[in-house]
Amino acid sequence: MDALPGSSSALHTDTEQTGLISATVVAGLRNLGAIISLPLTKLLIANSLKLTLHPDATIAPVPELYASNAACAKQSEYAVVTLYALGTKHGWDGLQLRQQLEQLNLDPAAVDELSRVYDDNRKELILRQLQIGHSFPHITDIQWRIVCDVKSSTSDCSTGMASFHINLGNFRQSSGERVTIVEFVCNAEELQSLINRLKEIERHCQQMAVA
Image (cartoon, rainbow, N blue to C red; front, side, top):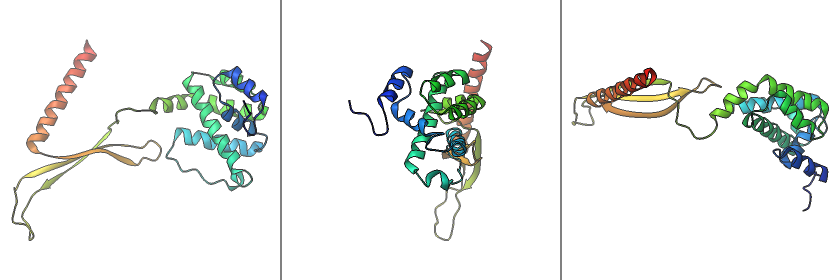
């Protein structure tokens, strides 16, 4: 099988030894501290961590990181994000991550920085990993207003009844921005029925907690 551009037989051997880290990721990691200078390596790792923990965050542009070899920088960003995802998925601590990296013939200073950043942020990375994938939305905020159907100059039809506009949502952890999950309109009778059903769910939860 032909080697990928920029790869070697040693790289494929290393991949077989780790059994988890792909050749593409290894190639991206090998750029760190080599093709990419150590100061820019540290900045790239920090930005990759920020994007992993806060996907909606705004990362300040770093022209010098992409000026000479944008493809190389993007490959290394992907490699760092993937490495940390693998680490949290398989429950590695900082030492285990370092042992994986030491098998790959990386720049020693890059290994130190990758291991340090992972170890310092491991708890946050694990929590982020648990949030990835399909899950039901987590509602933490409710907003409502009363809407009244009245006659106007353009319409003679009116029920004269008030209804409730309900908006359920939550807040982004990174920015604090409120996000709507669902909104609906109901009358007073329907709202009371919903409240009763919610109270019924609450009673069942309390019973389960006591049992």
